[in-house]
Length: 206
Image (cartoon, rainbow, N blue to C red; front, side, top):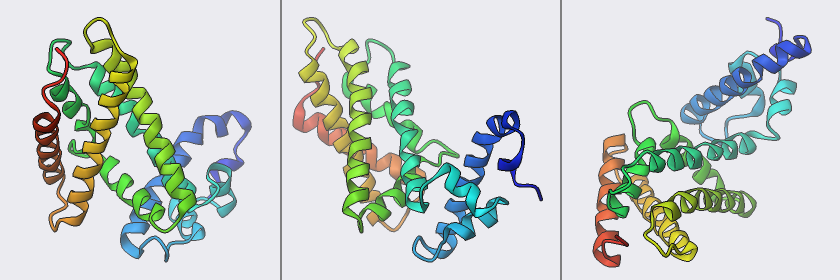
């Protein structure tokens, strides 16, 4: 089978996202079947139907592939928050902003799990995870600021974004540690975390 990366330049440009998606899907399945450590780049490339050299044109390593998964949740959270009604209480809107994590068919939770598992054994990868979560915080704080009453405070928007993402982290970790890893259980953990945030921090600005 011809390697998609060996097509003419125009074809490679068109196929680039398809190749990345194929590699990502193959990696996710192999990580689940064999574990992260036992899965090699060669295995991922073979399962995706491309040469190993093609893998390295898209990702620097299997860890780099997993870290790339963290590029997508932030924009999804931002978009979901933008779609919430303007008069909705802030904690309700922030909770609903994380619906993309547990919607049917979503890969976000699984991808975040694998990325977090990799990062636990690597300070360098942990820094990359934290940097990406900070990027999510910035994206969300920009939308939160637009929802705040006048006079709007960037500090308050940043704090609300940080608190919301802390609630996500706590809910996600409790879900990981539990025996039932169904997505509806993650949704329940998020509900609990945001109920607690509302109780501890108050209803938020109105």
